[in-house]
Image (cartoon, rainbow, N blue to C red; front, side, top):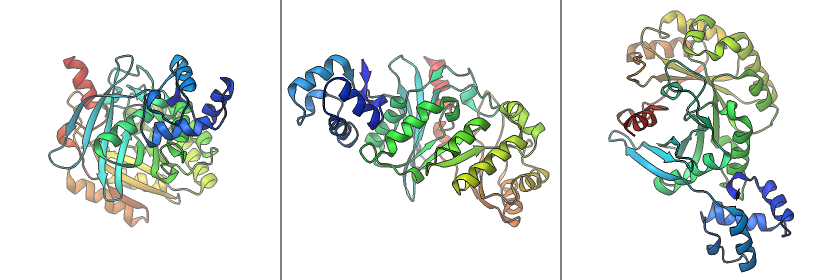
Length: 342
């Protein structure tokens, strides 16, 4: 059975040609799926009964079940657990900003990157998500939380470790006949798979790129992020500069501040040396506490000191607002708790 949500518009056009139907049927079906959010072929009233019968025999339209949702009492953040067809569990988050609602989407069940501060890494990767499973997260959040205008691929998983399906997902949500979300309203976050950064730069998309950096030198970054053994900072920075030169787009560097680990004044100056001259922005993140890991967020004084050093060097910098701390909104936290209880 073909899941129609796994197809880009071009792929769906070929699908209809291959089953002896007109190419234009793809746009009709896309409208039913993504505009009207219909998953039952019988409700597609401008499609002939014969075609509906044919589609029911060979295809289906997936949808995710919301297994659980937790609503923050301190802000408007909502954390979701979604149940997949194979009984796996993934997370999604809805976040309200002044510029609109954002869906934070997972790209894998679990994660293989083994970053020491991330709950998603505990237990490793189970499997990659299909494009449809990413699309369904956005649709489910949109239906429950309200109109989604922005997407960040910052949930569980490493997007560039599931590159082809992530690119397909972007084509579907970006297409005007799909969800119609502009490229500049979509952000991909990677821990630094260097070959994929080059490949992504050559895609010529308007999609934003965010790098999970979290340390300003190789020794510390390798301790926190094993990916640094394969792609050390010199290689990563070279790829980032290629991306900026190729796309003329700014990169955001995510830096989680961990008490006593990467929050010292010397680390801030090292970060300035690493990034100076690059078209970039630094997003400082007071890290969420994860019981199994034990890291604590840096205190506010350290955060403000870090921010001042970066800004004084002429580098744009913000401190990410802490969201959903009371509902375990950081990647992997709620899923891990749910699986232990199940």
